[in-house]
Length: 284
Image 1 (cartoon, one colour):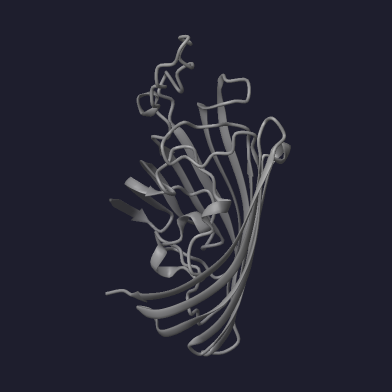
Image 2 (cartoon, rainbow, N blue to C red; image 1 turned 90 degrees about the vertical axis):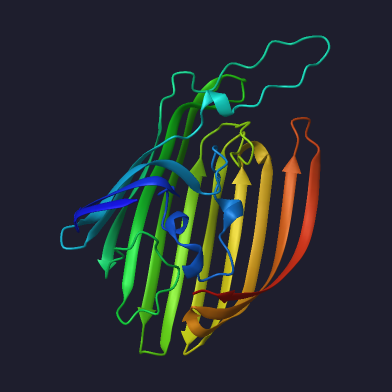
């Protein structure tokens, strides 16, 4: 649900995408790559990029600044599963967020050229004029994760990103996206959570060149957990066939992903995957 008072202020309420970065508020229909860079984005609440809350957003200074500031449900004590009984009995872990303090998330975007006023941003606009922006974002909630000492503590994540779509003509344009995330220490027992127990840093860089309805595209993903807890390296390449823009398209992606996971005892497990995806999108 959205209430619009002016271009400078809109109020959204309900289940929505958490505004940590440009990529986390892109609609699935408008992505450029074949899917979200989900391995690079780590949230504690386990709601697939989404959360229930209230958000303020708008454009300021003649569209030069785009802001989104939200208060969300986040991690709640009632959502933490109770450990199964063991022998000998052990005390249950301390409750997460016993006071019900909400989750706060937001971002500021500085529009160098053009602007993006929509609720769902896009990874590709087929723009007639250049759109270039840089953004910074943060996501935090007190006592929402277990720190390495087993005690509840602050969850915090920061983001910095670049989005650029630069058309040379109606049929030729380049699209470049880059995003870096930093995650503080903290493990979440919420089902579906992807928080990093030791914290870490991740990034991706994505670039494509569209000529008419054909767009070769490549991207690389990299995640490094603190204390070498997990490392992911994944280069991808492919092509998008924009038969009718976002309404009807076909995407081909081929990638390689190497994942190293290190236990507290120092043992490392390595998985190497070859990935291939052929995807058709029909939206109406």
